[in-house]
Image (cartoon, rainbow, N blue to C red):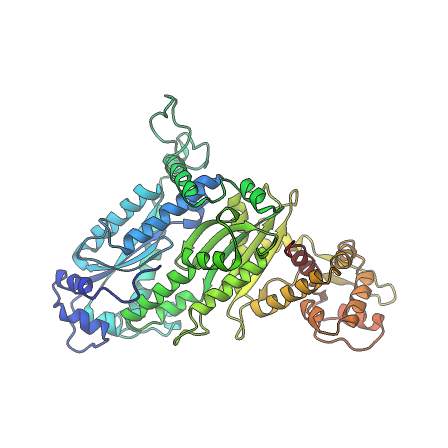
Length: 547
């Protein structure tokens, strides 16, 4: 589970007393009583954040090393939450998850605590993390900071102002301090040192470990690869996770893998809008539980996904990365259905209280037949996750985007360019004298429309019809035979009595006109784009579970 849902009052009191403030003021802060609180900035909020945490976890292409890095990061978070030896007795951890932590400590010890956390993270993860702090007074923890750190305009758009905003205003100042520290850390990174030494044979971007292996040969891998590989072997032996992605495919009896990236939507705005320290701790705890391995354990029990049929890369904070078989089989759902259920489950974690309806996710799913390096696959999945957030609207608080990249497919610098490369302009309307640009997909989807797409694919699958027909439509579209494809689509729509196919293809209405007249209207749209959902429907149908 995440951190405790209520603050350790005794520890918080000790933090105040160590800072020279009366312990009773800790109680006043928790009760949001500003009167009588000190204006002296004797306390500090300290943040530490792992640098490029997803790239760190995916630095190695070997699943065993990835598993070790992921397990080590989760243990780091757990130790911080338990206030282990790296956290002094005078400090109180408010949140720890996904490589990020926020600690309340005496101001005099803030800089040394930040440096200590950076060193401890580097020793455990063989990677970098950046710490920053802002001094606060007990009164500011309740009423908000006396002054806002630049950029003031950006904070003002969040509704924050000097002397207002409550605890969220203090967190906004801390977030800016952390961004500034990260920029400074990148500027001081010694490029010469990083490029002038022998590189790790596994990660390619880290110096080799000093010394020799058991055979007496010089190490060819980095401390990162060596340490996390050993941790990964223990982890996989303990929970029986797949030993490699090939092993995962074999044991799941699947042909394709799905790389899933899920990220909280509007979380930052929500956190900075909180007014009290207690409210922040409560929301942070709910966030950690919603995105942690606890969620995945529940999903596994409900869906029958065995440990050897998935690999968790990151689960914490407001991020979730995992690899699963793309196709459904038996009781196991396909990757897109699994993504939908996880998204709805995360939404449901915030169903109670004032935050109901305010927290959602962006979910990106990259499906590949294999051979694509994990780092590249998750880069695509992250881009799809960002794209999915653009589909979120006032009705749906979550969005989903997915893409299929098969072996031998040309890779592009972005998902947008990958899709644009497949778009076609066709002039197959000699009597109309018009041309049309054909989009390859309707992605991204708001989660409500995405569920409609899944329902249509499930219906087609259960009826054992539709996939070959839809595939024929897709081939016609790919070959530029838009006229033929649209006529076929017209008759498919005309036969649909439920309206599900029309919804999946984005057709709002179908009037009883001749096919040619209906096609003319599609082609004459102002943007000259006929948005087809055919490819999406075909790809989803291919993933439906097999008995």
